[in-house]
Length: 147
Image (cartoon, rainbow, N blue to C red; front, side, top):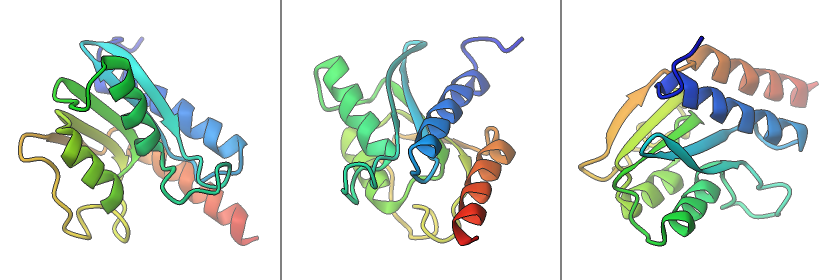
């Protein structure tokens, strides 16, 4: 049994969001935002559904979290996402002053680290949580797209 307040628990919830994206034909990336042990926002990619290149999972969840707390700063929040954020999403995390980022799979081409995008100096990062599961769903999606 997974302790409900662990990184693994919340990353499992983000993986469920990735499954929702997959069901919609979206790149399967999912996210949850947690404050004080409670999920306050969820999101998954909606770029195809909304025909909006900015409708990444993280952008959806950052907006929802800000609406939930009634403010634009997410200093006391942790964002769990299945894939390393891109530069756009990392920029949004920077401006929201996200307290902590936890992600599963790394993205060596489009991830914020590969593109030298800065997070807020106070943002703590944990990577590789359920990396295999997050990578598998992405690889399966793109393999299916190529066939």
